[in-house]
Length: 217
Ligand code: HEM
Image 1 (cartoon, protein in one colour):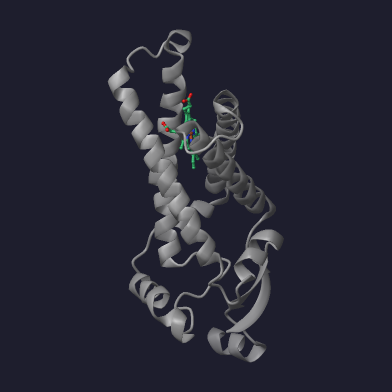
Image 2 (cartoon, rainbow, N blue to C red; image 1 turned 120 degrees about the vertical axis):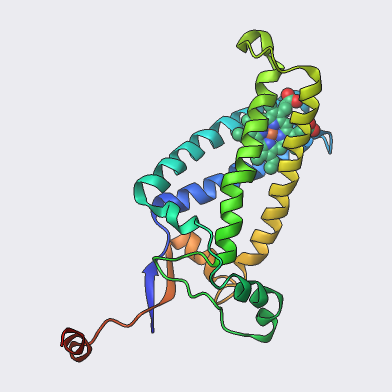
């Protein structure tokens, strides 16, 4: 194994990641104002900004889904049990003893098994929960205009609860995510990779002429 500076994240991936981060933070900021946690923009403006940011996030998510499927990058997120326990033990104990990372990052496998599981859950459970409940919330507010009459008062309570639960879970994810970004090779190596796209990773050494010949015989 040798260390090589390789491009881990493409331009689109970085654009998608940072735009999503800004939108989710803004949605949280305006959302918790709507929730009544504080006053900053004022309720009406907070709702207006929240709706605009929500539409932008939906457009971004549609592009991201398209990108993941056309590039085959969705495969990075398929959960695996291989080294899952080792990864968990690393975060609980090994990391405090300077143990080596159990899952080495390569261009073909950027995510460790715990990240795979977390991001899979984020994409398949949490995001759909927040977006669907948010859309239902949005269209419930104007039933006559959009004709969604089946949603009655009782269900709005569940929609609001589901949306707020999703928002809290997203914030919990964000806190853990921020901590996790500091646990790479160095404190800022993961952050730098998501900004520049490049990171030093261990790639299998290219075969030397003699080993290549040996393989052929
Ligand atoms: C596409 C995604 C989203 C849509 C369509 C959406 C839509 C909405 C709508 C329509 C409301 C109610 C506004 C009103 O009372 O008129 C709302 C409230 C809220 N949203 Fe979102 N939202 C989205 C994403 C998010 C995200 C990512 C967060 C936070 C991380 C968030 C947090 C909140 C919170 C905390 C409330 C207040 C809930 C309550 O107290 O009932 N939303 N959202």
